Every structure is written in structure tokens, then in C-alpha cells.
Image 1 (cartoon, rainbow, N blue to C red):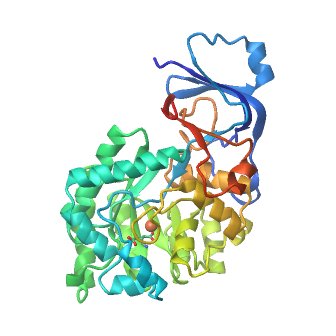
Image 2 (tube, helix red, strand yellow):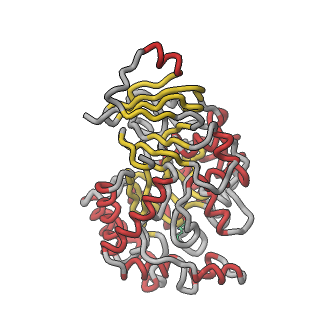
Image 3 (cartoon, helix red, strand yellow):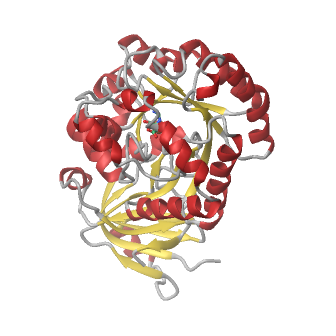
Length: 420
Ligand code: NIG
Ligand code: FE
């Protein structure tokens, strides 16, 4: 049995009663906040929470607990980063000046850079090198209040051993690091050069060889594909995703990241768990996603860094009733930043999401993006004691004071793992 943690005198406790559900439409902007609150953990779960008046009336024995005075602090569920390319080799700072000189993301990729460059770096890196690099990023994520991270493969592509290496690094980190990892298999992240003239052959390989092997080894829960002009077509995405579902994967899709391509519509047709990016998502696509319960996983830091001036239309998504989640998309190309707080702040400033919408997006809705609403994403009795404590009094201040790290302490499974 772990020592219990008592957090008391909390200025604002984000105590949204999610009941295992996403928050969409009007509810996306609704949170329950308890002022002058307490929270108690027992073992790895949340045991009780409420007002300080209730706490005093209970006569709690503090002698055997770790007591945290959260005067002036905001306490929220541990944040969930539900879209990252965590495990990869190398970095691509050489692309910065190309971008400043007018090259687009696709120009760089088509010239053999971009994802192809990271593919080479990831192939060259040993398991240990990939592990150490990803661990550093996880430490940074934890320092920003993140307690669960989704991590994709996708830098091995046709080199299946490298795909497996990425997934195995994620598996080992899930065992070793306080952050929980959720793995996604994404071999269709680019079209390998040698298959350019026989795309079908590569897709068949993914469907018939790679998918079953990854499933058999238990290395991923989700499958994802980069559905975009010049990468994978709509028809190819349908084939790959439908086959991935048959193999047993839950579905995600990189949709409408660079242009309006029909990815949002496709995610609705296939009833994907989430469609991610959506910068170019059409009105019809957004409506269809809402009608089919697809989570709109927006990646504001990527839009910022792609620097086209375009952002996913979160207001439209919320109006139409799409549950919106926010993630970093941390990767060496389109978003070399692990900072989820910044992603939340950009979502507010550039996409006009309110602090309430932003917090639901990075907690309960992000938990839904990885199918974990029963255990994480909200502070409710019986749920995992995954808790972030921030050096600010309320959620408005967290969003308003941007570009810094607000974290005071992080608790994972009832243990203080940051700021102890
Ligand atoms: O989500 N667009 C595809 N994948 C990543 C970028 C990966 C990379 O550039 O290395 C994304 O933007
Ligand atoms: Fe991505």
C-alpha cells in the first residue's frame, strides 16, 4: 500500500464529472471547479475530493500521509498528450532555414528530407539511443504536467525492423517511465522510394505481413496513416485502415493536415476514434465527424510551426458538436516541441478556444482519443491518481500567462513523480 497523498487548500480543483464520457458541443466548455478544495489519494487511485469545509468536518488523520499545501495552486487531471511521434532518431534543425527561404513541408519531404530524413536517422540509431532520446522527451512532457502519452511508429516505414524497434522502445519506456504510453502503428507515414511505382505492393505488405506481426507481438493498440495529397490517397487510406481494423487495431488518421483532402469525411465514414490535424477539414467533414462521434484531435503547435497562417477550425467543430482534443504532435519535423501547455495556449489564442474548452480538450477528451476515459482524464473518486498541480490560481491564468512552465508537482498513480 502506498502512502496516501493529501492535497489541501487548493485554490481551484478541476473536478469535472465526466462519467467516462467525452465533452462535446456546449459541454466542451463546461467544467466543474471546486474553490478552496482538497483531494486525497489511496494507493494509486483517487479516494476523496471536495471542499476544505468538508475536509475539516471529516477530521482526516494526516500523520501517515504526504501532505501538499496547494494554496494559490490549480489542480487538474494529469494532462494527456494523445498524438506524438515520440520515438525517433536525430533532429531536423537544418530544415528551418529552408522553410524561412520559402520551402514548404512537402517540398522538403519530396526532396528526400522531412520524414525520409528522420527515417534514415531512426534506422541508424540503436535501441539504446532511441530509448535515451525518447526518455528525455518524456521527462520534459512530465515536467509540463503530462501523465499519459500516445506514441506512433512511422519512421521505419518499409524497414519493418525499424518500425518494430520504435514500438519496442515505447513498450520498454511504458514499463520504465512514470508516464503511461499508448502505442500506435503507423507504417504508412510516407511512401517508400522503391515502391513509388508499385504502391499496391507496399500496401499489401503492410496489410498482409506487418499488421498481423505487430498485433501478434502486442506492440500497438491503434493504427494510423498519413492521408494527404502526395502521401496516401483516400482510397489507399480506406484499404489500409479497413484492413487494420480487421487485424484488431483501433483507428486514427492524419487528416487534412496541409490541404482539404477529404480526410475528415473519411474518418467519419470509417468511424475512426480520432481524426488528427484537420487544418483543412471541410464543413461537411466536420459535420460528418460530429454525427459519427469522431474526436477532432487538433494540433495547434504544428499549425503554428507549419506557419501557413491556418489553424484547425475549432470553433466550427465545437459548434457542430465534435468533441475536440488537443495534443502536441511532438515530432522532429512539423512540431519539435513537447510542450503541451504551449499547445493549449495556442489553441486558445489562435483557435479561440476558451480555457474551459482547452482543459476538457487536454484531459477528458484526450483520454477519449486513446480510449481511456474510464481510468484517466478527470479527477473522480476511483479513477487513477494522475494529477497535475500548477503554480497558478485558476485555468484562465494558466492559458493567459503563456510560454512558461506552470507545473508545481505531478502525481502519477498516487506517487509524486515531479517536484517531489
Ligand atoms: O503529424 N504529417 C505527418 N506526420 C507528422 C510529421 C512527421 C515529420 O515531419 O517527421 C505530423 O505532422
Ligand atoms: Fe502527427
